[in-house]
Length: 274
Image 1 (spheres, helix red, strand yellow):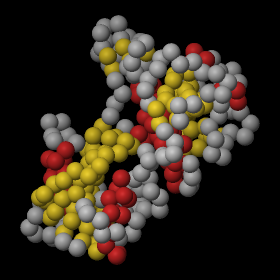
Image 2 (cartoon, one colour):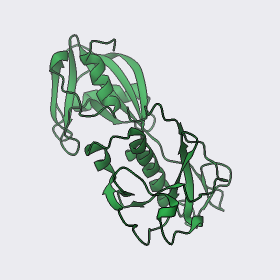
Image 3 (cartoon, rainbow, N blue to C red):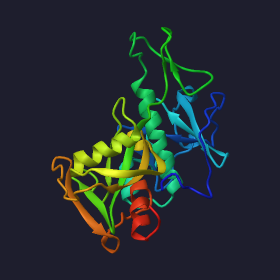
Image 4 (cartoon, rainbow, N blue to C red):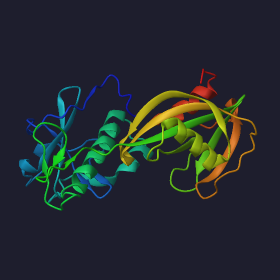
């Protein structure tokens, strides 16, 4: 999965005392694009007219490479660099997984910082906390990074798995998925989403694994479960264009190993315990 970046190690502890030097990596976003050259993010020494006070420490990789966010518009694009859509990093076969993971995580934080420059309670300008990754307002409002829980569901029907395709966006096979509602447990989300998307009741809900997915602020929780009773699929055609039972040998995996969805489909395809 995207967070499985061994032998690299991701350190996300917030350290407001960290200061950028010439070798620090600076992530620059414009709308949904990131500044990049080939597979390399710029270092501070590559950028001109950047005020170091506009840099926010994000995280480090391997305890050495420090990543900072440029919290303002980039005035001048350095030679050899260009802005590329962050989704293209995955779609174009960008082969350094830890860099894609760094990009997606930074994108999540970038949006959080930009969306909270003013307080949602009183409207005043906010400031960065000096001790933890938080944004504060003088009215007492404290804002923490937004993390949205969602589920990925592998529904099993004896020797078959329920696979889907979305109506829009991502074109490869996937599993039932959806966001957790207010006042709902993750297990209740599993039951509701399977019923909404495929018209099926489920039982024996069992947790598998989780995954951060910063491109949409998610923390994904993967579950397997068994169909309960009638296995006739009633597909939500607004959400999906495909929903069908497939035997292991007929399951088409995604083209990379970034997603929890793909790992769950692969486990079933390989005959592993689900």
